[in-house]
Length: 422
Image 1 (tube, rainbow, N blue to C red):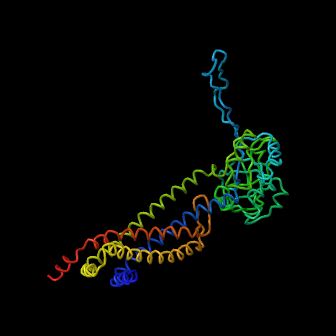
Image 2: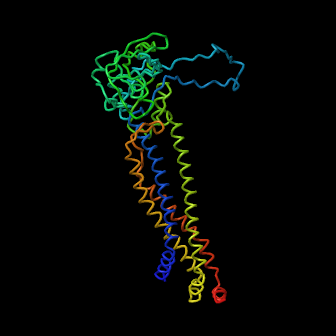
Image 3: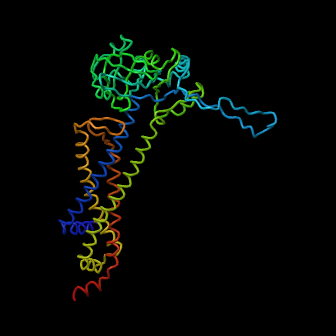
């Protein structure tokens, strides 16, 4: 019986080749668009996560002292307590980690040695960079190069220059590509930086780097001592400490432990980039909504061809029912036709999406994709995206066949045949 229904379904589908081909093309195009969109969205998120984990610190010890737990003066024996207000005018204190060497010793202790792979103290200083008639505000990040290399791997990001030149000269700097382009800086060029106290200092470009992270490429690296001079920090103070840990996806517990031990705020890379990750999540919801709406449109196309088939094949359906085909078999026949049309269109759309994803990924165009700068588009090849979209498309096409199949099941053979003879 199944073989008979299968042959009938194929005859119905092939009997209206133009309409069937048009419907399958619509299903295929919608499937291609959805898979490509999901691949682009998820690819950008995966690329951002991989780049941040590879280049940026996993945990940052900030120079923000934790607030002490306030005492509730309304509980207990309040007669024995007094509240005083001291220095109630707020201060805009600079972020600083004092005696950072002690924290580095803690991180190097056996308790954290297995989890913390690298630690790099840094000093961040906002300055005005001047070259000739060009000037712009720039963030100078002072680091200990050998420690910073373990965090950001700045050596492999150099497009020109040499780290040895940076090590040898105390006033040498490494310039991000964005800054180099804006100020027209080249190797060995002189750059003047003006700190917040109005004092100017001369620097020499020892290299230009490009990480792909826009925030990093819009900054300048200097020696730690040089940045401490810019900020007016003594030798035992830094702005923060960047950490590289063994498992960056499970860093909340370690951050909490370090926060409790050091007394300073410890932010994970997820918290540092929470707004961007939230944006990606919202885009993901929008893409899923597109999957639903476009799938429904494809379902209408499948339903349209089946409604037409039922209308034109009413006499054939009546004859089949008079030969003993049940209403359930009629429903199964047209649901099966919807399944075949949806499956063929979705599979063809999957093949088209392979080509579209490959094309976008291979485009030799450098573009700024949110917080990253990439050559070509970051595309994801996760096979689950293909399976998910194809499965949803086929499911919607099958469900869309329920309405015409129910109409076919309600046809009464005697009435249809009598009207046909008239």
